[in-house]
Length: 338
Image (cartoon, rainbow, N blue to C red; front, side):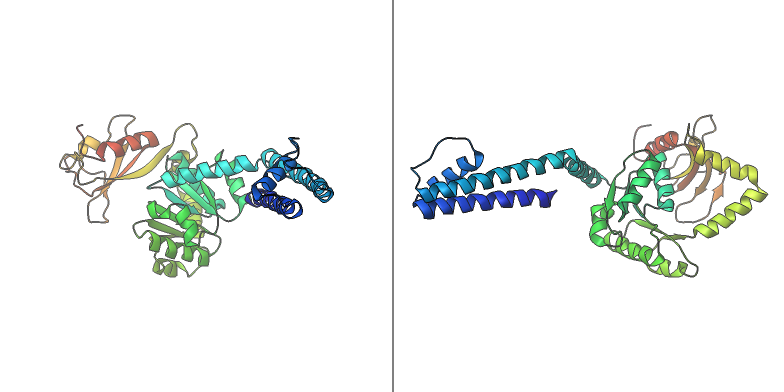
């Protein structure tokens, strides 16, 4: 659209310059008089001649009128086409989206809008997380929008490029998913994301065998092999179908979004020093505390005793509806009077 508008503006400017110089050279008029005559001639307003015209001047005016009519017709048709074709609304939509992305902080950047990226986006949307998708293929992004039931923040571009990641707000992001079609591209995403935001958690999708260690050396905080996970899932589906069915019901239930989630106890939380029983959720409807990972360890304390004290940095593993989990996260998130 910008190119088309610039072409119209360029032709109009050229016509004004040509008309002004023509009257100045042919009739010897002052430049302002020549410009004024050119404007009223091109606009076909019929104000009359600024000064009496010679035969050569009239001939030049006829040429200018014909050129002006053609130029105005082209200009109006171009503007009409831009509006009718939706280019103007598309530009405004993109600007709104860019402003929305610039306002994000603590969001997630998903590099790749394919099948794996679509599953990630659907889960982020269900759990109320902000995210931005980066993909170079507009058609792939459009198909993902259909899957998600509407438009979502996205950047059309190569996720391996630093500037594209900056546009997606990677420097303010909480995490980055590298789920492009090749391990090489995913490694570039990991490297770029870690340089631009060392605090972000970056996960990479492994496409071929033997590259896990390379992706980890690139800076990935975690590497997921879909085929390995798929194999485990098939085995679990065979030998423990009820358990797998329970997990599936959480992911596929449309009426209520029940999830396993984790909450970290900040140092200024009013729950620090209180007993774990205050968060165990024994009553119906409240999130259920499944395990605690004590601060500074990777050990899981399954179903901790009620008298266990809560410490800053403890990570709680809970299960419940997403709204209730978010309420718990806000409840323990700061030093509030509860």
